[in-house]
Image (tube, rainbow, N blue to C red; front, side, top):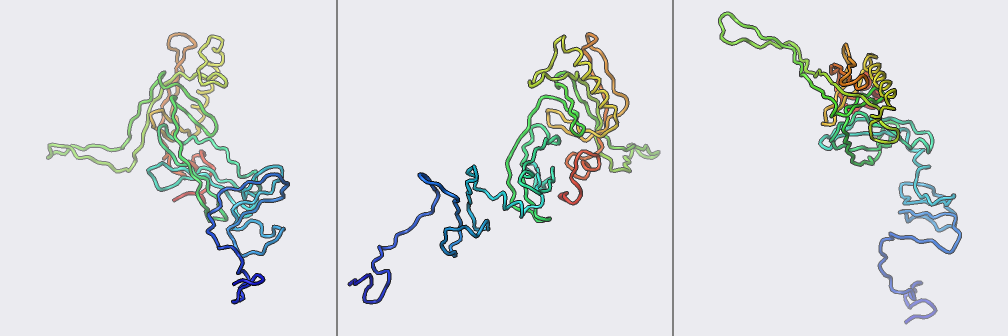
Amino acid sequence: MFLCGSNFCGGSLACALTPTAVKNCNYIELKNGIYDDLYLTKATDFAFSHEITQGWTFDTILWAKFNGNTHAGNVDWSVDTVSHLLLKRRTDDQFKWNTLVVKEIASISDFAIYYNDYTNAAGAAYEYAIVPVLYGTEGIYSACMAESNFDNLFIIENNLVYSTDITDGFCDTTRNIPSSTVELLNGKYPIFIRNSIANYDSGSCRGSFVPFEEDECTMDLSTDGDYRRITYQKNTMDILADGVPKILKLPDGRIWLIQTTPNPTDTAEDSYNNRYITFSWVEIGDINSEEDLYYLGLSEVTEEWWNK
C-alpha cells in the first residue's frame, strides 16, 4: 500500500517504476539545438553539473568542444603526455622492430609524419607502427601492413633517387668468402683454409638510365627529350662517382648497402644518345641494421632509439 510517495516501510522510491536493464550506449545524436560541449566518460563517481571541470582523463571516451569542427579526440591532451613520436617497421615474420623516424613533440602539428621509406625491399610485406613515447616509455602501437612493388633498379643516396627499367639492364652478383686451399704432399685432397668471417656480395649492374615524364610513370624516350636524357645520365655518373654509400635495390627483392667501385662507364649502344651505364659495387653493411644505416649516413636515428 502506497501513501504520499512512500510505503509503510518508508521507502522514498516506492512509486518509482520497476528498474529496467540499460544497454551499452553506442550511438549519440545531437540536433535542434546549440551545444557548447559533448563529454563522455566511463567514470560514474562525479557530481552532476552544467560545467565540465574534469578535462581529459584516462576515463574520458570523447570530448567534442565544437570549436568550428566536430573533433572529439585527445590530441591536446597527448601533447602533454608524449615527448617523442616514433615510426617503426618490421617484416611480418620478425619480432624485432627497426626505428625509422624519431620526432620530438612540442605542438599538435608535430604529430604529422611524412617519410619515404627507401630501405624496403620489393615484394616484402611490412608492418609499420606509430609509437608515442613519454621520456623513454613507449605507449600503444598503432600499426598497419604495407607492401611495395616496383619494376626498376634503384640507386638511392639520402633523398636522391636514380633508377632504370630492369628490362634494359642486369645486375650480376658474386658472394665473397675469402679463403684458400692448400695441397699437402701426403694428401690426395687439398685442405680448405678460411681465416676470416667476411661474407659479403659484390656485383656489376648495367642499365639505360632515362628520366621519367613529369607526373607520369613513363620514360621520356622522345627525340625532344635527348638533352634531358643525356643530362640525367651524366648526373647518374656523378652520383656513382661521389664516394658516398648508397642503397641498391632490385624488383626481385634483392637489396644492399653498397659502395660503388672504380670505374663506372657510359657507353653508346646503337646510337649516340642510346647510352648504357655500367658500374661495379661492393656490399658494405647490413640493410636491416640500424647501426649500419646510421654510421653510413643513411639514417638519422641515433643509438638510444635502436632496438638491440
